[in-house]
Length: 115
Image (tube, rainbow, N blue to C red; front, side):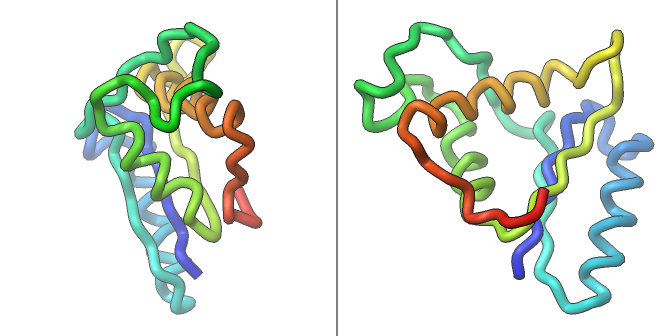
């Protein structure tokens, strides 16, 4: 089983990253494969909101989101970690969540059974 953690914190050594690391260590101790993606290390542009996703075979933006989304849909389980800034997730996590709209428009389901 492959478990993917996506961390929206801009602070690599911050509390959210630490807590996600603890969760990944625990599941790795039970034999699961783990991977952690720190969104702040990648370029994930905000969704353009043009509503034309269904007419494109790939998102027209040139950034790292397609690579991350490929990892996301192929994971068996997903952990999303984000600190709370102004009563919401971070801008990095929000951009990633919004870019999932492409998956929705193409009726692409996650392999994941646990999130």
